[in-house]
Length: 367
Ligand code: AMP
Image 1: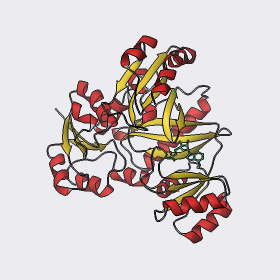
Image 2: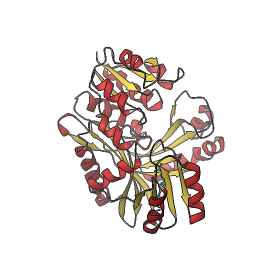
Image 3: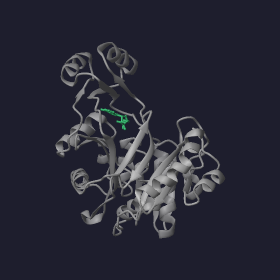
Image 4: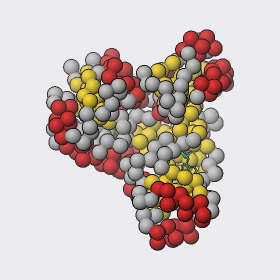
């Protein structure tokens, strides 16, 4: 019986375990929160990610370790890697944690991005404005997620104010893209370099938080899918990656601009639990355990709605859409917090949307 260690005990860890228990796997999580939602499906070690004694206790008897949270300190992942295989390798974590390193890495892999500039000091800021122009987005290089640590700025005064509010953290300035839509690809790379790619999902964000994903993305051409797959492959090969990775893109005049990647399973891939032949969670586990990857094709069309802040009663959701797949994370309601998701399936995009329309108002009403 293999024992998998997961750094982070949030909903992603919980869903990894829910996919891995049928494969006969055991799970251990490390999280500072004693109420971490993954505690219900495996052993929870409560402690700090950067406490060496805690890390050693966590590592004891593991066959492999991975992460479900990308802000784990890289030094902790490296310390762990001295005792147990850590996959994906910590270089992926290090690259994704810093927006400047990440965007520079995308360029090296041949992925177009929104024009960006390092604005770590005031001189750099003046130069950056001349090149990037307005409107622009000022982002902290580190610890930004779900729209945190960023501000859209439309003129010099707004930029100055945002810069003062975020200083002294190092930042980047990025051109604001009036994208046609946001798309993401979830991909997996296994032992020996085998890769599988899920169909692109179309994502709707509000306030920087993912609200909805539709997969396969409507009006998806083979060309766009192939482009995204080639880019994901380039990124994974350059990182010598093992596991699931997601890249978020802006679709802009037919071009895919890479915004960021997540070295882990991703919210825009939650539809794969119910809507794909193999879920992203199972494929991540297969990859890190050296098992063959499963097919990533969609079995049907899916609409995934996040439950944010608080959720309607399950009774109400299922009464409105009996086919709804409800996933609750066992997290206390709090504004802006992802506490679950609901996936609606259909033989066609119209059918899935019809189901989604039946529950969307109550989900939005509960937020
Ligand atoms: P991020 O934290 O970079 O994933 O940004 C969160 C969300 O903010 C993205 O999903 C977009 O909806 C929006 N956003 C971020 N960067 C830009 C940009 N350069 N232009 C337009 N919208 C952006």
